[in-house]
Structure formats: structure tokens, C-alpha cells
Length: 74
Image (cartoon, rainbow, N blue to C red; front, side, top):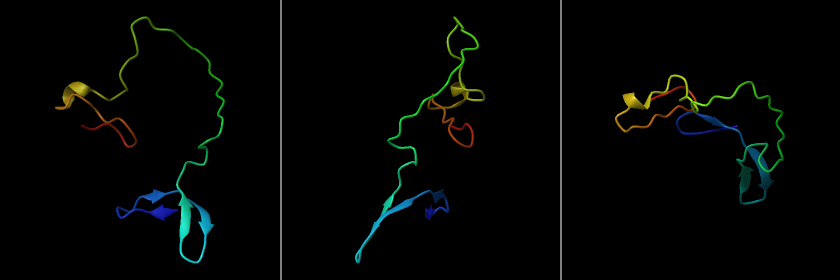
């Protein structure tokens, strides 16, 4: 793990080491892999896709909402 100046940990793999440098691979461990998903359709709506739960862009002055990671915010 590598630490950012803000204290966030980032997973890393040592790719190579020589007398002058260390090269890290910061790609996700599944990067470049083929992924297969099994899906089950549980319903179809003709009204469209609802917004992400708790994310109301009407509350954001910019008209957009950041709903990633730790929650929603403007």
C-alpha cells in the first residue's frame, strides 16, 4: 500500500527494482482481465431509470451531484 499526502491508502504492486528506481503498478488487480457477470432481470420499467437514491441534483447549485464513494454532495 502507498499513502497519499492526505493519508489515503492506494494499493500498489512493485513491478521492477533496479539500482536507480522502483517501478510500481497502480492498476486495479483486475485491469486487463476478462470479467463475466451473471445477471437476472427482476423487472422492466417503462418510466425510465430513477436517479441514484439520495442524490437530488435540484439541491446542487451546479445542477450536478457527486454520488460516488462516501455519499452525495454538491
